[in-house]
Length: 483
Image 1 (tube, rainbow, N blue to C red):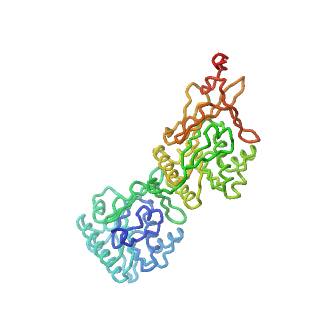
Image 2 (cartoon, rainbow, N blue to C red):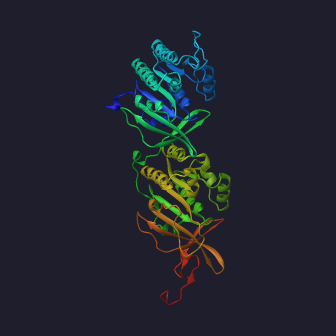
Image 3 (tube, rainbow, N blue to C red):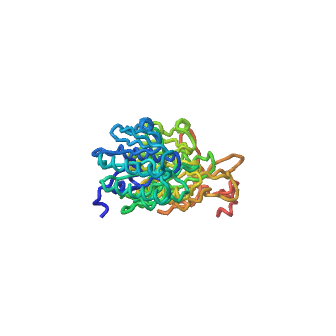
């Protein structure tokens, strides 16, 4: 059974989660990718993670001095790591130097023998070789190159070491053969929309498939596992959550249910965020923790608006019942954002989440399928018993067609609350209504509402008007009203 095998952690928490604990011991893992993709940084994490045995860094590219300086900048101390410097022009302790201008046959064999010799002397638990692509230039032909790499990997793993080695991603068939010689492949790609990691192979072990975003920063490399909703869940009661506004709760017949998705939709400035925040105010009165992820405005603007209508958002943050997170979508990828949400739910016990708005969130998705990402995020939150409020802006102010959303995600919503403008007696007014509620009945009428310095006010049902959804209503004649 795989669970009985103690895996070797890479030292990168997100990557170990994708690898379901790490890599199997005494296996050889290929780290492939282009220049600047983070292959060396990943290897440094792997070596530094070892605390019980020795670690060996074999460098065929940069010198040992360069590597230690680069590692120090990433706060990855290589002080306890043995470095075997076989870089072109680099020198080992015995004074031997290696040059790409010397005999290919002799050099290829010498590199192989030096690595195996040092490994047998040191008996390291972990070995990182960066990069075997340099051996290709020191071999007389493709056959010799493959033979040397295969022999080296077998001899190194036979000493009890777990081996990670890098290869520059090229179209050469010489390096393509490394895929078959290794026990696993971790592929790193630097695309225009971000850095992506994919596990392409892992003999004898399961792993999370698909691509996962990662970043390189001053502390090294961080990987954000792709969110898979089916792997998360917890028990919760499907009880109703009120807004604290009686007329609004009448529309929803008691409020929205815990562990459901509510889509709040309408044109710009109609009051979608304010209406959604009303549910968070009520949640705070019950001592529950809520989070607002706002892609469209900063905290200062949000709190100023709340102060102007008597909504105590500042006090809620001070008591710990509310966290406002201003998200710059161009600085977050979807996996990174999902990781932030998971932390708030699993570590901080967030019970109510507001995503404001879908248009802003689309910017962080950057060309990917918005529906797929929103679906995964909402399903995860629902499985965890979190109540979700999604803000969706429609582009039309008024018109003959009342669009629910511009993003085709209405199927995710258990409840849809529609806010609209209307023109009545030469004035612009607002209406609110419920279009859908899977978990129970709801009021089929529309009501006028307004946002004043006293807060959110919802009026009586508008039963004397027709054509409200068009934004240009007409008064019904007495006979049409049944009089």
